[in-house]
Length: 163
Image 1: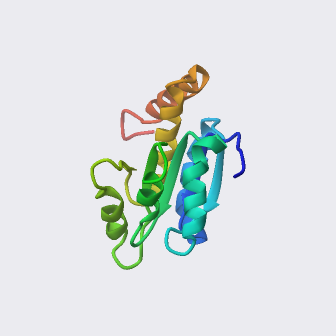
Image 2 (image 1 turned 90 degrees about the horizontal axis):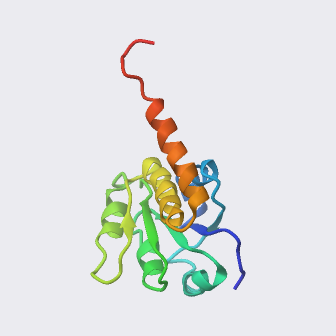
C-alpha cells in the first residue's frame, strides 16, 4: 500500500478510458484538488482492484471516481470493498454507446451505493466537481473555490443571443 496526499483517486478499467476520465482530472485541477489516476481492471486485474479498494481509505483517499465501459463492473466492485464514496462514470462504448455501462453502474443492489453520473465526458467532469463538493464539506478554502467556480460559470452564460 502506498500513501497519498491526493484526496481523490480516479480509477478506470483501461488506458483507453483516460480521454473520458481526464475530464474529471481537469475539473479537479481547476478547483485545486489533487488527484491520483490509476488503471485498475475489475476483470483483468482483480488482485490490483482488491488491494486498491481495501486500502484506499488508509492510503489517504477520501473519494473514488471510477470510470468503466461495457460491463462496467469497476465502480460497483470498488464500492463493495471500501467505505469511501464511489462516483461511477459510464464510459461510452462502441456497441451500445454507453447505455450498457450506465445500466451496469446504476443498478447496484441496496447497501452498495455508487453515485452514477452521465455517460461520457459530461459525467466525468461532473464527477470531478461532485468529488470537490464532497471534500468541501470539511474544507472552507475549497468551498470558496467552488463558489467562485459556480459564480464564474453563471456569469459566462449570456442573457441574449447577441454579442
